[in-house]
Image (cartoon, rainbow, N blue to C red):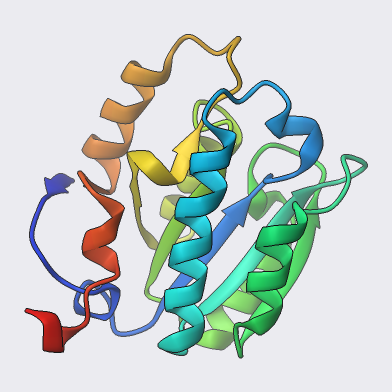
Length: 177
């Protein structure tokens, strides 16, 4: 679709967005160089979600532990939240994800997570296949160090969804414009 660098809050992109936190589990974060920054950026988004009543879902790969504690704490504070597991890279491989999103009336998914070149990308494709729009920003997704395709994958997000140059544009309220 496009890259966007405007100054707008998340609700200006979508009437009913849902944040997906994908595979932010200790096992997958071991080899992520920027994990502290990634967790901090995602935490800020989840705080914004809580403050603005935007739903959040943690998507966890089966048998790889739980989402890291700082993010779990933030997700638990979001009024409308869920945790689902998956047994394949695409979060939509668990039909419960689509069921929850449809039940909540989601119209845009904000993708955050690890293994942007595999699990986040496959979930994005699953979202598109299910008819959902999606967005992300470079500071909200990452890869383990052995994935060397990151620049190529970022262009995939730009071509197929809404890619923001700075995630902080999502955190701006209309009053700040």
